[in-house]
Image (cartoon, rainbow, N blue to C red):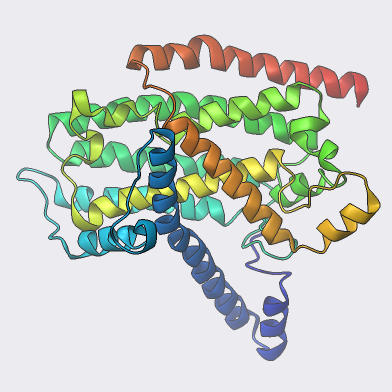
Length: 358
């Protein structure tokens, strides 16, 4: 059952002050929606600046430097530019679907974020089927890209959306299988219970807890999620030398900004999911030394969670600006001929490990 911030002190206070369950539930829901929007939208400009600087350092460049200290105001200037640009659809486009597509793409990461436990009492919805729910809503992102490319009445946009759809659907299979591995070894599809199953030291995190297999599962999650996010080196849908701008070639202003925003919120969502499933979630990285562990336990869980998410985001960004883009046939071959069979083998080995060693 979906209970917005049900165990949070603020939610308990609202229920005590307002005697009507329906009204308190509605207020809780509104607070939860505002909180998720604030976290997701508020982090996007920071991540854009962070990515530009990481790109600059990897490629021996400066990145933005002119607006604000070391270009800190550059992202704000870009946001203002996009907000005030005229939004229009090309001639012959299906205007309803053209403007609907970016909103659909933006819906998926927001829905997925509602399942993530940021701390013991910071989770919007605690569903027993959290992992299947996230897998299901990820399809909205694919749908938005396909609709946007088709509705643009542009051959490059259509080809970009079809290539993107083929890539995302293909790698979504491996993405789901890795999450199924986590569900199998933890014994639950509930994200809060998956986090609690990693209680103890860092040796109890799922990346380490099952020798070798946990680390392999993490690497496979990283690869499949990078492709599923449509980020370089797996961004064949936006291959400029072939497709101009891909599925969003005809988009401008706020419509383009929504696609751009969806990419970065997806990055936060996927990094949060990796943190929850493999890196202990909001649990502190205890090392078994009592004096050190006591200090770590004094740090709030959401701080540890944020630090792990930043680490994952940095890893995605470093990979983006380090490796070259493969050809589309190489990318699809890698999924169907290597990654998918490897994931099936991983599931079999994981099941064997549980059956033999419990």
